Image (cartoon, rainbow over all chains, first blue to last red; front, side, top):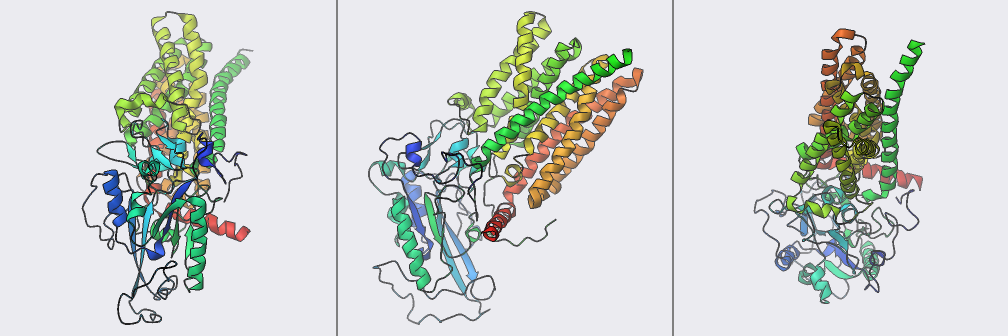
Length: 323
Length: 304
């Protein structure tokens, strides 16, 4: 997955140890991020609400989508946390795994049964039973952030915490970051023209607080902390789930050598990423930028050469004709 | 053609976000920037070979095109009053930043070249500006391909190697078309030659783009983009044939050359609007994001 064209400094793609340091921050604090463990998400949307409230994000539609309990529909300029709801028939389709026997909770947490009756051991194929997948999505704060790379004004920048933030007083609303994001996170607010996205609560981090969504999450599905620590915790958690008979548990976005050099916000998922609306193998677009500039240069020279030839050919034929 | 590709999605919603750019502004800019940039090269060639009518006409055309380009770009900003922030930094990783600086060098050069040609004043400065515009013009015409392909939009990013050549060819077609329409007939031999070369290169590059894109090439054939690109091919081909034919006609050449020139101009514009529409279509359907990424993963797994 890593690029053949990767520069030796890994500035455009590939593993990158210290994004904040490379952005010029001296003595930067450890890089922080989110680990969203969707196996314990209960779909309460407290993260969405806390994010809206803390960041004073305007209302962005009150329509009913028909997409299960998801009326927010996706991340956008005015939605920086988004809870996805997926209803899957259990055992009825060959591609869908059977319902897991009640996933175990994280360490030290007492699990309360939701009903008195014990859950059926395995639902029969075609029994019409559903399983819920719920997942709180957020900006990935990529190690190689395409939005930041392509921003022509320098409005998007890398913070000392290794996160990616838009400076609202610089953004001129060119909208280039929007199609650059391989996750479809950042967006222009129609009423405002400027681009907005999750700041990982930059203001709260500066004051030594955790982001509002993580603070509000009642099940610790959203965990905030130093990225290295979160990656260790996630690896333990996925092992725990595999041992408990949930083989479909997998981490998404955690590898430092993935297409974006590792996500600052990564996930534990219970199905393929695209089921949650996430790209299966995104690559930062600027990985290929050196090749693009090379081809654009060659094309510009071809243009110059082609037009020169067009002036030379008639002159040559005329001279031949006159002889 | 891959039919019924199996892929998962979240309620069929797109994975990436399509740009909110207006086609009129941005596809229009791709066309106008190409017309201006390649036009400056034609203008310089005409200037150096003593084809003064064509030279002056092409200098004016480039000035008008680059002026309209700037207007379109500022108009498309979410905050037009902050357009000057484009020159706040110079970032090689941002094709838009590079392009802004490029335009701010090219634009004044094209303007000076036109001013000196029309007024007849300051001929040396005019010549220098003509050369300056001719040297920066090709970059103005091709960097826009990088601007489009440096995104996650499948139809644009997937064609990032071939798109600059297609843009260069399309820009040359537009400029030669403009030279046929506005230049003097007795001076039009180079424009006729350029029209034929450009049309051939346009077809070759288009074919290479579609070959490269595989499944995503569907977006170049279906819907609005398909209709635009098919019309573009017909007009570009007809324009090149008319241009070549007008060279053999002698006295009746003028109307044929003009019609060919108009066809080439329209063909180039439709090419840019078609590529723009294909990109939007590829961003709006999760299939074009998910399936190629799945294929890449499968290939990586198979290789390992």
